[in-house]
Each structure stands twice: as structure tokens, then as C-alpha cells.
Image 1 (cartoon, rainbow, N blue to C red):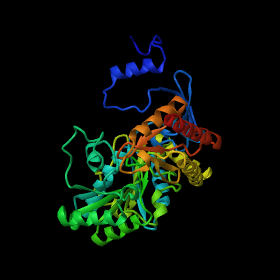
Image 2 (spheres, rainbow, N blue to C red):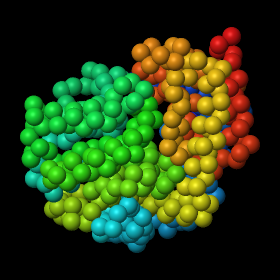
Image 3 (cartoon, one colour):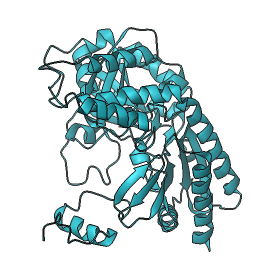
Image 4 (cartoon, rainbow, N blue to C red):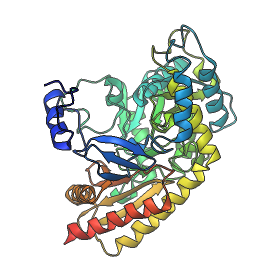
Length: 434
């Protein structure tokens, strides 16, 4: 049957059946529903059911689904041109977006930027630049970190299941150390000592090009780096001539209460990667860094056919306007405080809530049996996700044990929708406990 001839029933079940027949099983899907339309923090599926969206397309639509200003900018660009390839015939909007990112990036050192398509592509290019700038090859990343599904991105990612299973071998000269996690007994001192052990036993510091870190781990459990830790990393990198790369693919563009999460930490990374929230739902990513570092690659060494697509760039410029005009960084901080206060109040009733944490609106709850971190409870987290879905709320889990609820609401959602979603979470926890 022709899937577009109008004879196929538009139900979630029918579409799931078609999906199963047409797609490989390696493409995951958190919820068995199909979107028909969306607005701000709400989605309606093909059967007309309304969903509150506490996922934001995995922290992509920070400015909400179909923000009017972002939509208008995209439509205006569609009427001009959709593609030239920037390296063939350039356009001013690409330059303007880079100028704005350069001006906004933390630190006083002059910056340069360029655009690519995805978070993984941004990360890979950041490592390319670091190797070119230092003449070194080694990269240190962190256990629990997520940096993409490309071959090099997988190598940098510090989590085997499900990202690395069956896909090796991976590129070499990549070394992983523990990320600080007080709940699970990993201190800042232990993390720094692990880097020193890498220098002693695996690769000399003089051959390490970069240390790559998420200011708040995403897949690793929405785990913020301690405030002093990035400063210690900065000092360590400076002592050894190593570049510090901040992977802000998920933490950037207001998600953590600043345009760049590293602004909270009082440091200036050498290179920063951005994606997700930058395009407001359109596909664009960026690499931003110190000008002298960014100029290390030879002409032609950086770029991509689709990089900096004109429609996506127009959307990104509108996103930056919206973040500023609607004070979404401040809004992000308020949302985070409201959610964490509500979750903290729930902890007295639900002993499985071992820890509430976050930075800005990037908020998490880790579930463990009786609050014991040695007994991670992925089953409780999954049951919460499923029960919330039955009640009309979309949630996602993360963490090294799959036991962490991560909440990534659009920063434009109303207080009423935020409270409605939090009410569903609380009711769902009560239901699954019963």
C-alpha cells in the first residue's frame, strides 16, 4: 500500500507497525507516539491527543516549538534562497551569526567561529582544530560523557551501552577518566588524580592535544561539574599546554541559565561546541574558539556542503534575539529553581529519589532503591516515564545506569504548563509506588 495515498489509518499503532517494517531496530524511540503538530511546550499526536513536552526534542527547542519569531525568520529566508554552499558563494547571515557567537563567548580573548551541521560534527572539528593547533594527538574525555554517534564521537563518548556495542574498534589516543560525582563517591581530587595517572601510565602530557568536557553531563545523568572543577582543569591544561574544549551542545543557548554554561564557572575554554538549542529546531551547530587556535587549520580543512544552511542560520539568529528579548537565561534559572524545589519537597515522600540536581533549567532526579546509590533503580525511572506518558507528559531518562529522570522543558513554557507537568510527575510517582 502506498503510505501516502490516504488509505492508511493515522493511528500511533499503525504508524509504529510501518516504522518497524521500514526502519532498522537500532533507531530508538522513547515513546510509541507520532507528532502531528506542536506549539511552545505542547505536542498533539496523530490521534489528536495533547502532550506536555518535558523533553524539548532533547534540549533542542529551548525557544519552544514553532516560536513565531523563529518561524518568521525561516520563512523569510525560504523566499530568498535555501542553499549555495557557503564555501562556494557566501552569505552575510553566516558571518553575522559567527560574529554574534564570538562576541558572546566567555572570556576576553578574540574569538572566531564556523558552522557545521550536528553536535557530533562540531565535536570532531573541535578535536581536529586542537590537534592542528598543538601538533599533538591525544585527547582526554570523561566517563559518562556523550559526544556523538559518529565513529570518533563514539570513541570520545564514555558510555558503552547502547552507543558502542558492536561498533568497534574505535580511533586510538583517546583516554577516559572519572567525572566528579559526589553521590557515587568520585571527588574532584580523584578526577584530577586520574588525569595525572593517564599522564603517568598511558600518554605523556606533552602529547595530549585537548581535554574535552561537558560542563553538565547529558547522557551521563544531568550531572553538573562542581563549580571549582573546571577552574582546576583550566589550570592543569595551562600547565601542560593542553587545550580545554567545552562541549556545550546540550548545555548552551540558555539551557543552564547562561548563554554558555561555562559562564557559571569563571573560565575561558579554548574551544566551545554548540548545537541543539542554537537552531530553534533547525539543523545547525557551531565551533567557537580563541582566534589563534581556530586559525590553526589550513584553508579547506574545515567546512561541509550543508554547513550553515541559510534557513537554519536565519533561525539561529532569531533564536539569539528571542533569548535576549524574552530574557530566557533568567527564565531558565527560575524554571530550574521551581523544579528543584518541587522535586526536593517530594523526596520526603519518595525514598527512591536519591538526589535532585541541576544547573539552570537542566534538572535531574536520580532514582535508587531506598536512596542507596549502590542500588540504582532504572526500573523505577522507567515506570515513572511510562506512567507519566499515560497521563499525557513526555519524559526521558539518562544516566550511566538508566536511572535518572532528566527534565529539559522549553524555556518559553508557561508557569501553568510547568506546574501541570510537575503535578503529573508527582501523581505518577504516587501511582507507581502504590
